[in-house]
Amino acid sequence: MKNTGAEKNARERMRPGIITAGGFFGSDDRTIADIVQADEEEFRRLDLDFEKVAARLAEYRETGSRGLGEPVTVGRKLVCTGDARGLLPCPFGDGAFHKNSMEVSDTETGERLVLSDLSIHLLGIHHFLQGRGCEFRLDPEVLSRMLA
Image (tube, rainbow, N blue to C red; front, side, top):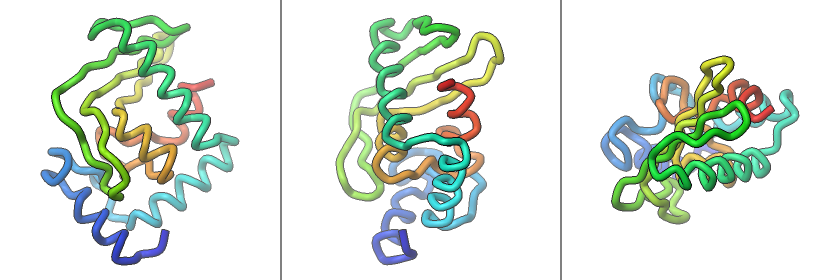
């Protein structure tokens, strides 16, 4: 993605308090394009596929939702989902997603992922894993270990 008007508009919508209270960048001051490029390079290095990772996370969400807010065991992972009323728009302007959260915890290592339906969409379609320091950042290294 080039630093175009579309990226500028998306970046504005990703600021804290616009779509989410904390925004999408955390402490990261890189451009969206730079974040995406770095994460795509990491995915290649780790032999990960964006669509397959998004599909796997969607499977966790589906399984976790059966627990109705209580943790569900999936192998050595605990998956807990929560819902809130409303929708979150994609900052790139291509849809709105159920406002929810999911935590996937590895019971052996204690490592965890925190994400939402919007996070899965951003990963699978836009290759945007959010900025460093963002609560919902999907770090490629962590994804690789958690989905192994």
